Image (cartoon, rainbow, N blue to C red; front, top):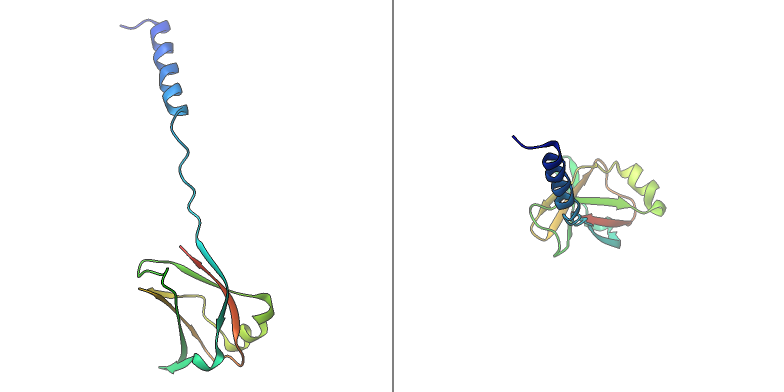
Length: 111
């Protein structure tokens, strides 16, 4: 049986080892501002308008947030753009209820 002094020494050693563990690396998304979704490139597919934006940083496993600039909000709202996106190798696809009446400037956040 170990003495209390030995147990305390072991606990201190374990805490020392834990404090030496490096901090995990913080993952940051790839952020691409100023992407323009051109109004004429929305295609009617099965009662919804669809837009596919190419970008080589996107993989089939990527999560892509498409964030409209404040100046594009009226166009986004009138088009009824859905929040869900679908990623594929080299592209992201999004949908809207109506055809946008103008170009929409967005930022892509690729995770």
